[in-house]
Length: 109
Image 1 (cartoon, rainbow, N blue to C red):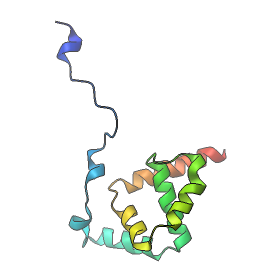
Image 2 (image 1 turned 45 degrees about the vertical axis):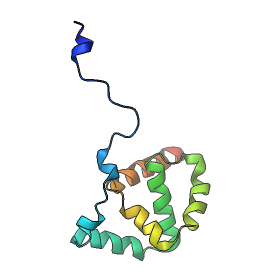
Image 3 (image 1 turned 30 degrees about the horizontal axis):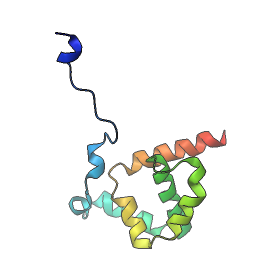
């Protein structure tokens, strides 16, 4: 029997982060760090929150660098509560923001 037949099946294409589908808000609603994050994001001026949302979308590969203006226009059309929820429902928000900032930085050099 060939070794390829004995090994693990190849991973499926697409999303490989099972935590991305988790809604941790009910569990973390009273956690001090989560409350501080929610308050910090809510305290940002609206235009800055729109940009944070756009960077998170860019980092999560939901848009490309060419779609930044469109993403900012889309963010402006989202209610404050929905925008805040959209940011806070991502367990990998820090990763998405880091990747988005990296992409923005690499486009300016």
